[in-house]
Length: 207
Image (tube, rainbow, N blue to C red; front, side):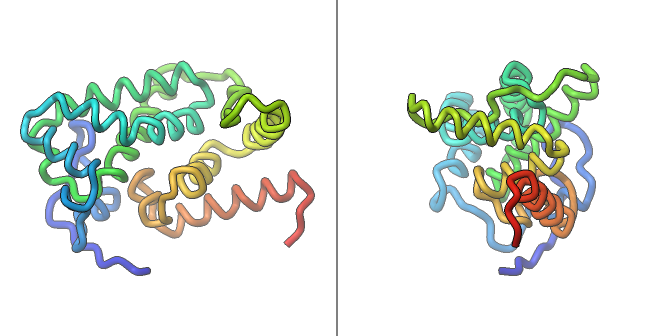
């Protein structure tokens, strides 16, 4: 489905100027409202100064924020640091949050930028964590599958791994991935498709 985008205000996700390409998708003609979405209601409460709403935001979005940070940084410790930084930035955002029309994409954009900031500061060279995927149950077969898939995911470029996570685990559309990562929709779709194509190649699957 094609969305009509009209940007009237540049949204700043962490106190810095947001470029038009990234901001355009955050204010859209069909916003997610507090009546439609508990996350939108929590963000709206934060905009009104209710810091207790941080708990609701964490409950509703924390897992996706951590997952994105983990898949981008490859480190559980770094992912935890990224999520903490996102919530620090949220407490400083105040009334600016009132302009947010796509809270899920907005929060993931914050996590994306915080992860990149962390990696630039640390200039990490360690390999990607061996635990990108955790099995849902204490099942040896599931653990073995998770270990195998994680080994393959480690071989993907960071941007492709991130796009695959956002599409297939966080459930974002290509347009929302573009918003979250600050790239055009075509680039977001290309990263995801290239990542999946590489994974199929690793697995020896032909299409």
